Length: 482
Ligand code: GLN
Image 1 (cartoon, protein in one colour):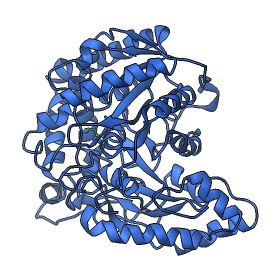
Image 2: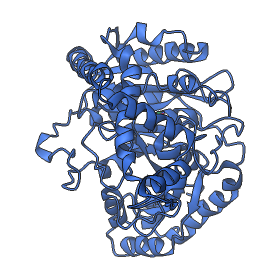
Image 3: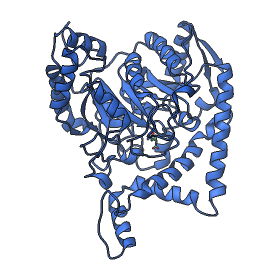
Image 4: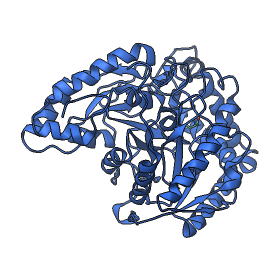
């Protein structure tokens, strides 16, 4: 077996490590070389790390027979997940020089296994966006077509993986930020059940919606990373105790529900609709049952999201006041310091959402907007729970279109928000959702299909996704750069 950054899988590389066919150092050097080659154009990474110590530790684990499947495996980490001693800027000027003083819980457990962090990846500022165009440090390009966006907000992580600079990547998903870039870059992405993966050490966007999750080149590799991510963490007060995690076990065939009226709306491109029809055909051939369903109120997920999310954003970002940490520009009075610091530190989209959030929470509007959105959110949760009494998974396209061009939606925020149409419901309901490659659009850019399941259905979700992966035959197209 010979090693290639393009084709070698995690289990193959593990085997090569254990059988001493390749050292961790030599393997990581190859990924690093690729990262240095693509990054000037793609801008997937904000920073590439010195991996020397991590490589030595991984090799030691292998040599002493203590390796796990993840030991020595290169991973790209979104810039809003804290790694002690490294800058975590959330792609914001506000945190340009902010060095993390501790490890996020998931980072600590990956470190223990000797995973090699390749670098921190570009993203939309504070994870707000669908294209990485909102990064304070310039956008990331889609490695499959550099005139197009990689998706967002975890666009850097997706681009890093799709350009073969790592074997796995970490993202965060508040309204689709793992699944949408996964779909745009031909990858698998999972947003886990809310409360199952620790958020401790992830820079918060919308705390009731955020989850950390994996990007991978295949369903089984996404599962591998997920298995390490899911554990109870006393540091995170929304982390569910182990006893409450009633994982659903896989079964032979699954019933997939299609919310027809939701997905046949206007903004959905023809190629997405056609691809989705093919996916359903193939799912049937794979032995699954397809039924039409109605999920009451699901079409209100997006408006509900764009009330609850900014409300939480405005509260979470209140801590950046020019006093405690982050950018500080001194003014004549404390108020002046605050306004200068926040004025210079936040980009336009972040400011827009802070204003929107402050508005919906303000006295007099709270009941009309925020409380109403919470009520509808609860109704959507109930509606989903009811649906899962009848079907195993809700199946939809992941995005209404394939990867769009730079500038195509950035002038019109509402257009941009509409790209979250299919991904947002899962965050609203707190349920897991997975995107896997399903084919191509009219520009030969990847498309994805999404499965949403009931809470704790991940194991079965991976199983179902794997059965679809087999019949969908997505050809990993070479990047324009490789
Ligand atoms: N694109 C969505 C937004 O702009 C989702 C972001 C995310 O999941 N972090 O809010």
